[in-house]
Image 1 (cartoon, rainbow over the protein chains, first blue to last red):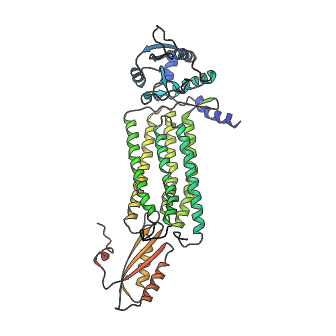
Image 2 (cartoon, one colour):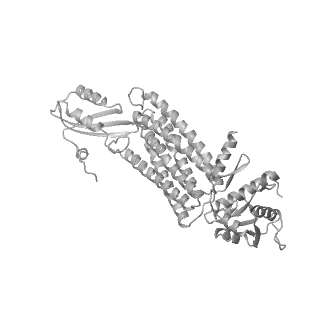
Image 3 (cartoon, each protein chain N blue to C red):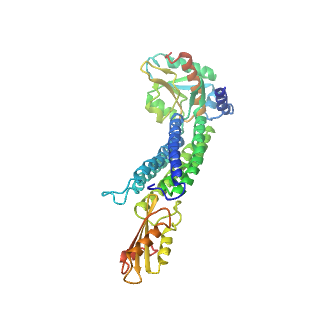
Length: 154
Length: 323
């Protein structure tokens, strides 16, 4: 009972739209119905050889975009170019088998893990730094997925 | 008991101080552990955590120092171990100052580089809540009781005349200010004001530097035998004047210069005395010395040195001018 109240208390501000995005990512995605996602090749998590990226993470991203009522605009690049683009808010999300201890932490925001690989590495997505409302939405989605899949990839 | 002022209830207060020091350590450790989990990208929380880690030092120094400082004097340390705490304090205060400077530049750089702090979700009982709210909860936990622990310590410090404890109490009491600054920083982030976080961090680091500087001044003054000050370091302690007046009141005394050293909780006094006549009985000198020693419970020892005229260097101690 106490737990439920505690969680309730912590969720109230969310109803008032807090935390907010300093650069308004959530608002932009909702208004334009577009989610700009950067992909870097890293099998089996991402496979960018075909026209539409495939793999574990692209499937997850599509589900997330559907939840937001948005379409995915894919682009490709190296890890470095994707992280740089996130920092300048030219992308909303980057995928490519990133791990929780990614060195890109200093440029981009790191999500909650959505899967744990066999060698106990936690897999995450990267988001624009400091867009905390957007990242919280993403974290809720990914944590839900993690619980539903019990940590197994896919 | 050695190293405890000769006052009623002093020993009981010392026991209380020990329990409070252990309570502080346990309490600070719990705060550090929680901050570690909710810190995420917040510079203000990182700064607050560094401050918490540093605030472990004073209660530890108090517990360790209390043990060492009671050891009796021996051949190697003929004045005893009372100064051990002051020596430890110089190191701790320097660390405090340097960490404050580092955090100041760290936060300032983040502000200048317009870095947006990332604080995401935290899985809790099957829900995901914003980590920032948990951060605020931890800050309230760290700030509120610290204030009351600090108040209790400062009362005991007064009784024991313990500077370590007084400084510790002051840090505890100031803690709510830095916690409040961090809460404002996190609230700022919640409202999309990315700069609020680094700004709060810079303010907290200034507080860390300030307390480092004042502790360093106190500790250096102690080892340099600065004239004793009251516990708040603001006024001259009345003891040198009391001894001076007491000795001047003796019929055989013509001139007096009293120099008092502060050694941990104790004072040692040295009085150069020019007698009126060439002959003073040893008995009289020791009687007056013992009486002078009873003027204040903190006085451990009063040495009376009869001289024909004041040595030049000792005479200089009377000058109020500082070099």
